[in-house]
Image (cartoon, rainbow, N blue to C red; front, side, top):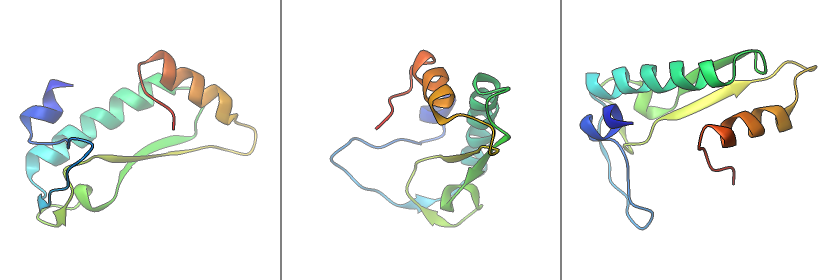
Amino acid sequence: MDVLTAAGLGLDYDSIRLDRTTEAWLVAGTELRNRVAGVLAGVVADVEVIGSSSVLALLAKPIIDLAAGLDANQSLPAVMARLEADGWIYR
């Protein structure tokens, strides 16, 4: 997503960096959350932005962390299938 790189988010696999969370990070996190929530509509209870990058001015890695909550009757394989179909890599 262009909004993530425009906000200064992202890291190469072999690097680490800490910066202060900015308004741009919060906006990017909300946009990413909304995208993922749309992809997972009907198979999860909720998707939320979590972690240090969701708190303004906190020192954090420039990575957006999301949590998807499932009810007891919801299936993790269904979540994985939807995310993989949207281009996400499950590890």
